[in-house]
Length: 358
Image (cartoon, rainbow, N blue to C red):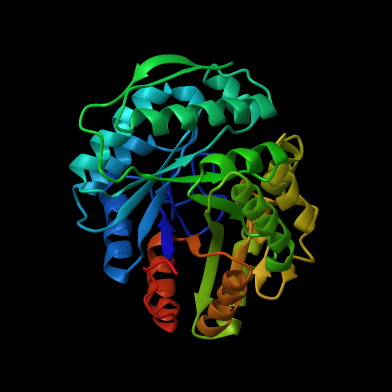
């Protein structure tokens, strides 16, 4: 199942172009409703199952953007990212119930336990890394209970609710997407996630984590699916794709790379440290596995790798991820509109029923 990404902090032809870095080139595309609608409608027309609407200081608010775009699409699902520390679980359940009902069942939620400490503090959240995952555990238990058939109560370390419920709970609750590379994150995913998300490390490295989380979920009496977050640069020929990657690299300002690497090196995120370890800040050894390029991570936090190659090469690499257990792919590219077409017209036809989970 393939999903695309909505660049709600802006888009452009370069990786470091946008609100987060403060670099706004003449080719920058602001995240207007009209432009985001173009991307969403293209994703729907191309056959993507859904789009991820991200969260963060530099993004437009994910719930509001998704609600607006749901009115401009007919089939597309919206994977809405948000952080538990920013709203109460019962209110989140109410929002999810309303969105699910008004969109005819097109909501999924991506629960993001936290960002960098500096950003969490900006929103008044002072919990430490593992405490944030403990809060997510309680948060998701309450959301699930509030969306259930009977009022739900819980007295925990972070929340105390009595009779949590929503009016007109949806017959099908939204799927829960959940990521995190730490042991604390894996435990929460095993208990609550429908889809456990990873950033794009080489498949052989991720295989161990897939198996570990699968066993944790099994011990909890559950089964879950696995998804991976990747960028893509796909062209008719491998040479064209790698030329595009080299252009992106050449256009990265060395000073911007240095600033980004210093900021990311201080991150408390286990997943972010794993992304950094793939390239170590070096520009000369960025193909970290066949067709897997870590150049994005020189200036961008979070998912920092891209599949680069011809359409058939990219399809082969995706098959490798599928063989180790990944069924869902959340993809993006620069610019997001053009890369959606490149992937949708060049790679997706190589897969039977690409919008249907296996």
